[in-house]
Image 1 (tube, chains in turn purple, blue):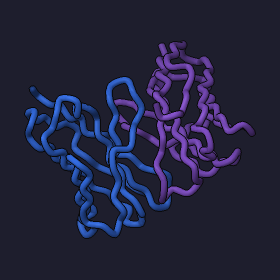
Image 2 (cartoon, each protein chain N blue to C red):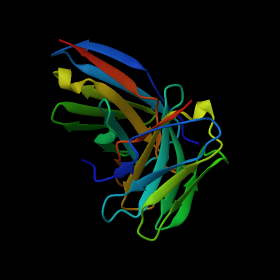
Image 3 (cartoon, rainbow over the protein chains, first blue to last red):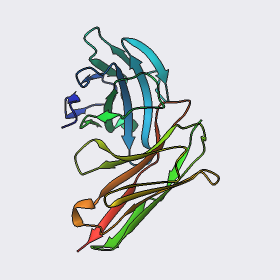
Image 4 (tube, chains in turn blue, green):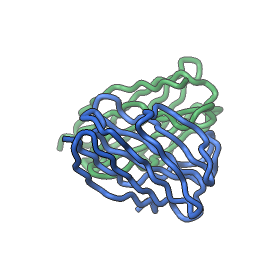
Length: 115
Length: 109
């Protein structure tokens, strides 16, 4: 158990809909990262928050947004869903905000299926 | 930005050694990592190497780093069926960790 909790574990929805994925980081970790894992693209970095502020942005679509709340949990909002958004979405956390040190602790992921 | 490449599949017999290879582009990474993903689970850190090291050994795991060629490898000695998983190489100096697509290791009993 990594200590990172993601909900829901599975989600099935239709094209055009909007969903929210939730992540609770390990106790004491200030950074939260969101990654998308698909068969063809592998693990793609979406966005990072550190202590409530956006720290880095990767290949995140404009239809997607995220935030980190004062209690440090984070939510990833996916809107106007398309079939290609079907993937496993991972949240990871770390103590520090910089990228060169420290281990990332991953949740078990939220599997999104768009029909 | 960082680009990490690794082969997608490897199949070995139980008891043999496995070698998983990775190439990366960003030489500013302080650490390079190997993560393991078991079925239905998230990624878990397996081992890492500091960028000024050439080799790191950790029980059955040996990591080799060739900085000149930007090549990283993970050797698993005496591979067991429990080692069947997807192994990800990761690095990133000026960006959050960039992962390769993962190498699926299948261990044949």
